[in-house]
Image (cartoon, rainbow, N blue to C red; front, side, top):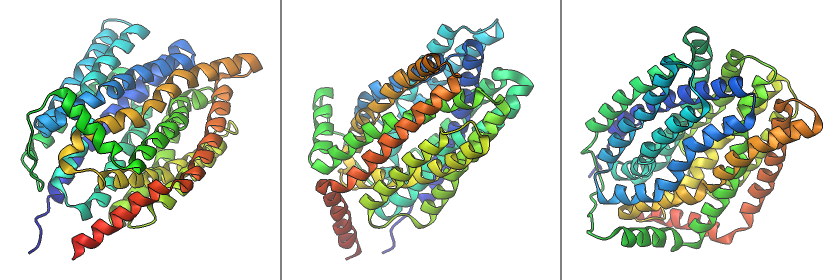
Length: 419
């Protein structure tokens, strides 16, 4: 008997998150430009990014428990809808006068608190809706939606910011929340996997989630590696704006970011069509090593063509790494524990971003001051060093036997499903 597929409904859910990603990218781009132009400091720009990210990280374990205890689509709708409150606050501040740095920080923090509900529920809902043989293609599509904030948002923001300023970007972002909530509501009852919600305390839920990610040593090692990797990768994410704005306009910045992120579009489409079916460990190692080398080239010189070329290569390889990490983890965790597991995974694997957001901007400013160079050049040096460290870490992945054992488990599951 042919299995029922929810892939079309998944695409609707994905479409809502795609739109939301574009809106969030507009706000992120606009606020980064606004803060850097007002302060001239990479550290201030990094502070806003840190406060937009920190609540999502710290609350993700709690959000994972909620995703397993309550309706996951409802959690997504609440997260998307209420996260707009922080953006509305920033918009009001700008409409009544010039928004101060502390007001922007408050707004992005409030928005991030509610956004923390999204990730574990979204990932677990995808597991609920799809069959195993659809996971890899879905992962490619998810990477594509995530890339929208880098691919589509910058060029739109770069053009619109010269017409209506940052305010028009915030208004568009607020409007996207409505469409996203509607898309999620439509697919609310679409599940292939039926899950039984156990009545247990939050402590017990956390314990079960921790057990799910520590039962197999390879999963925990992947999480640790991911945390270190996000520290290096966070550097390029937070310093790209100061790097380019130091010698080019915000319009050029928007175009450059879009050209760079188009690499993610190309590879995400490839993965979405054909998927990755074997050699996950090797693909993970190679893709991250190339990402690191691309970071070295990215920060090497104040040349917009070189920056775009190496940026394209960086983003082209990123979905391959994300797909491997996602698939090896997803297929080695029981479906009923996916919510709390992804909550803990998100928390642990992204701790590196806090280090990057907290230190990268400060280091760029200090290097620029110490060497009497522009902030952009200081940012470039930090990016290159981070790239070298990422390459070393990527090569070391091949030495972990427990990660390869996860891959053998995937192969065995696939054979069983086909019998």
